[in-house]
Each structure stands twice: as C-alpha cells, then as structure tokens.
Length: 262
Image (cartoon, rainbow, N blue to C red; front, side, top):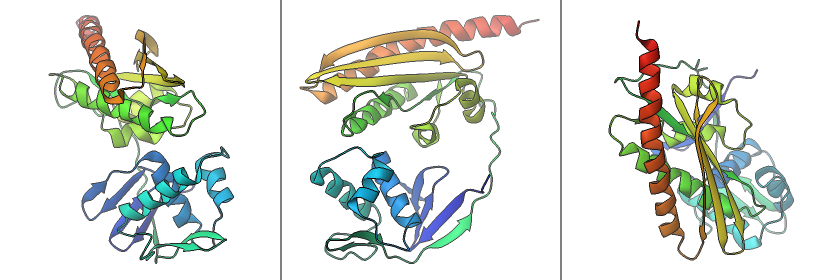
C-alpha cells in the first residue's frame, strides 16, 4: 500500500488521508465535493482537465448543471485565496478546461497506526458517520452533510458523552465500512449512521445507532418532513435523534459496566 501523500503549495497543506486543507495551523472547512475537486486538480496538475474529466472523477459520471460545476470551482478557488479574476492557482483554459498551475511540493505523510485510545473520562464515545444520499441529486449531499454536522453539534452538548470530530468521521464518506473497524480506528464505542432520501418537496431521513464492538443495532428511527424550511427540519431531526440516543446510550453503558464488574 502506497504511503499517504501531503501536498504543499503556498502556505497551504492538503492531506488526502485525513481529507483536510490547512493554512498554517488553521483548518479550512470544505464541502466534500469541493475537497475532491481541489484534490483532483492538484493530482492532475501536469495537464488541463476537461469538464467531462471532472464529472467522471468528482461526480462519478453523473450529469450536473454548469452552475453547479462553476460554484464548486469558485468555492475551491476561494478556499485557497484565489478567484476567477486572478486565477493565480486554478486557471481556466478557454474551450479546454481548467488546470492547477501553482507550485506543489509532495511529501510522504507519516503513516498513522489507528489506536483506539480510551476516553479521558469514564464515559461513552460516539462517531457520527456521513449520511448516505439515496437520491441521485448531487445537491442533496449538502443537506445530508448538514444534518450530520447538526447532529454532531447537538451531541457535543450532551454531558458525559465524547463525540468524534467531523474531520475524523468524514474520512469514511462514500466508503463501505465495517462498523467494528470504525469503532476501533476512531476509539468510539458507538456509531451513528443514516441516510437521506428526497422525493419532490418531501424528505425522509433514517438513523441507526450501533454498538461498535458487537455491531448490534441499539436504536433506529425514520423522520419525514417537508423541505420548505430546511433549517427547521434539521433542528427537529437533530433534537429527536439526540433525545432518543441519550437514554439509549445511558442504558447500554449501564449494561456494559455491570458486565465488567467482577
């Protein structure tokens, strides 16, 4: 297996393994598609990539509008301090495509051996995995990721519960995973996964809470709603999931501690 590679340009660091873009000591938040686009442009910086190349790599061949593609390119430029006017790092070649023209230095990343470290306190830890977009609309990825971020934020407010950071759990986005392996790699005793499906103005979101060590489902629920007010729906779903998960975790942790007693 090839060692993970870090890409350095200007004062930025792109870490493909962690799916992180950093500037100095600061972490720059990127939507998953924007990260994938930037990473693809840097990896293929020796040539001009066409619109079809980008769709095949970032959208797995799905057709998206010109406005969607343009917005992702604009977001990638903005994240690295570039713009459509200056095109200092990402340059548009008329009728050809685009190319990353900045000077890039490759560096082999230190291979990190996952170790499931015990929490610093005697309590449960949970990882919230990216929700699966069951529809064919790439725009729905943003809503699915927003739901997960809201749930992570809400769970972080629960006393006595450790929540794995988004940047760590999102490395599994788009991958078929073994929940037990995820638990070991992230040091989480519990994993929350789910899916998002849209039909017209209606949304259906499902969530499942799984005990990582055994793979046993502890809780599952389905939420239906309208997309008229996305933020209100996100809040309602997050609050409902947290309200259901908190007592479930308390019960599961109680059973675990009783089982550990001599």
